[in-house]
Image (cartoon, rainbow, N blue to C red):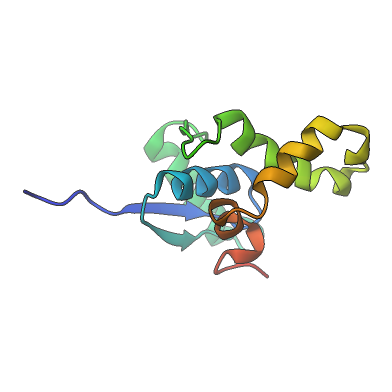
Length: 121
């Protein structure tokens, strides 16, 4: 039986979309190879990103979540953790804060955090 090809994730460590994909891959137990694409530092990164979008026809990825985590929660946690950068105080949203507290320190979320990416600056 042939083995399935390893998933390659072209990612920019600060991308919230890539963060959500990393969470989903970790929850699903998908072994993936991380390939950094720096979207800010140089034109090469943007050219690579443009080529990937052209190749895969969009720019967004549909992901399914597992391990007791819904897709909504996988999307919510990165957004809520980024909210203070935009002046949003999560204390005003206790239900959202409870979801974040439940998941942010789990292995799948911790391994997907921007600071855990090999290209994190």
